[in-house]
Image 1: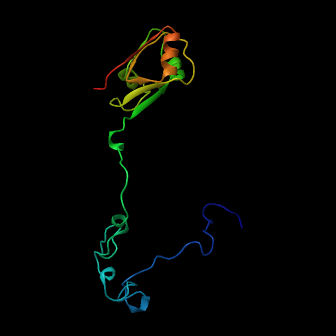
Image 2: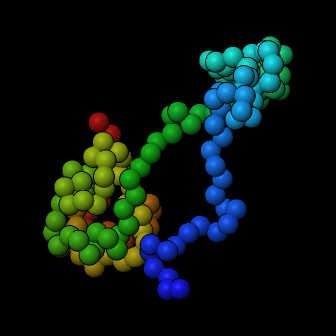
Image 3: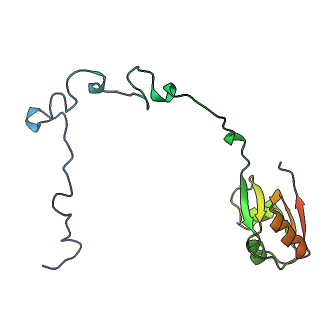
Length: 153
């Protein structure tokens, strides 16, 4: 027998028939439809929220809360490396977050931009972004360019 797409079948026992519920006693899943007798879980619309423990004080509320989380105020940056700037821009170009967005280097124009010092820079560039690492700043000035930190809008 040749094997082709029309003769392929799943391995025996790997596929199970869907349980048909509430279709008479003869099906074996009639009357209560495998939900047991009475109670909250047997009713339709049994919507208990996540973490609900039947009225008992939930675990999340029983354990003490400690510490402080300041993640809401975290500053998010779009990261750009020097080697990418060297590859894409010509000598003497002005680099701003808008220009990086226009060239498809960063996705979100509203995000702050930080230049990191990975790779080397051989071109004289005027970089005006929100932040840069110390090594990136040194590489920009060493190549004859200028770094300017701009304030977020």
